[in-house]
Structures are given as structure tokens and as C-alpha cells.
Length: 189
Image 1 (tube, helix red, strand yellow):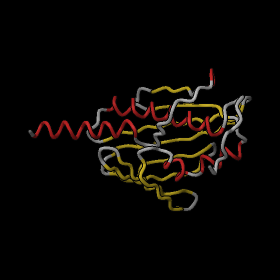
Image 2 (cartoon, one colour):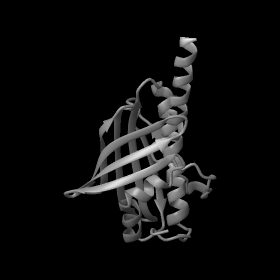
Image 3 (cartoon, helix red, strand yellow):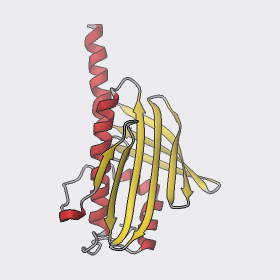
Image 4 (cartoon, helix red, strand yellow):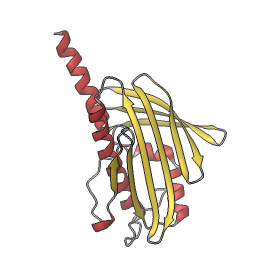
């Protein structure tokens, strides 16, 4: 019976890993060859990029609003943001089969934002970077994320994060427009 409870807990944590951390599970949006490009490095970092058509100030405004970014995730129950000098302390609570709360520090960088884990009972590691770069066809948004959850196989976490990064970038492209597709909503939406 004890092994069954342990297995059930692992399955619950694995399910959470699949939809955690900014996961935006929405219907796929097709943009021909302009779809997000996603890769996973040997250390488990998921790297995704997409080109959007919105002006730089709209893209910056969209990505600067971390509370809204978090709340677009189907599993995020709450996201509280507190200023910390130039940075922000972000407390995120997510719920799937279990509830998870973590605190991260998000700071602007020369080309976007960097976010690191400060505390969590369930996460061993969380590191995220947003890069915003003008390109010929619009603005490239690049998102790199590395995370590790207690008692959840890394392979499962990586697969979930990869899927969620792709869905997040697809949603951004649907909101901010593709290189040849105008934005259908503004960042304040």
C-alpha cells in the first residue's frame, strides 16, 4: 500500500510538471513556417523562439507584465508581484493534482528579463530568461527555461516544459501577431 501511495504522489507531481511554469495550453495556432522553434539542451534547458509582428513597445509591455503572463497559464491560481528595487519578487501558486507555491526574482537584463528561484518546497531549480531582439521580419522573442522538481523524473519535466514553452510562444504570436499577421489584441488585453 505504501508503494501505491508513493507512486500516486509521483504521478500527481509528474502531471503538475507537464502543465506548470507559465504553461499556456491553448489550441495550436498555425503560422506556416513562422511557428516557434524549440530545442532542449543536454543540461535540460528548454530554448524556444518565435517572431512576432507587434511594435517593440507593445512586445516589451506584454513581457514586462509578469502577473498577466503567469495568469494566462491554466494551472496558475495566483501570481503576486512585489517590487524589489529594479527587480520584482514573484510569488506563484499553481494547482493541478497538488498545489505548488514558489518565489522567484525577476530582473530586467540588457535584452529582456532573467528570473531565478528564491524558495520552494517542491522545486530544486528554476531559471528563466526572456530575450527580445529586433529582426528583419519583426521582433524575435526567445525564452530559455530550466527547471527541476523534487521526485519527478527530469525527462518528464523536460517534456512538459518543452510543450509548455511552445504553447506559450504560440499564444504570444497569436496575441502579438506573426511576421505577416497583425496583432489581434493589445498587450493590455
